Length: 121
Image (cartoon, rainbow, N blue to C red; front, side, top):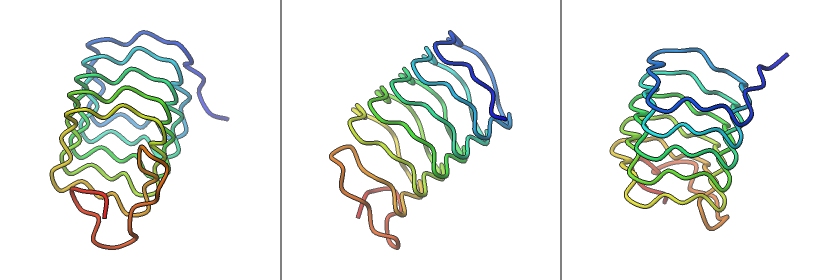
């Protein structure tokens, strides 16, 4: 069973290295949250506010981030393989060395399975 934290307010929380596999954080306020090296595989982050979030080396494999706010977030070296970012607002997100293989991009197209490091190829 997956944990349901829909609509939770975790602003400024520090959840470094937390295992949040499959957690439902849809509509959550995660502004300025620290999730460095956290595991968010298959997490539901639809409509979540991740503005200014720290996601450095986080694992978001197959996570759903549709219509989420990623403005000014740092996803350096994050694994976003297969994640769904459809309709997300990613202004100024930092994706240095992030793995975007097979990620569904903001506009709905799928990033290349290979060569999508740091950018959607």
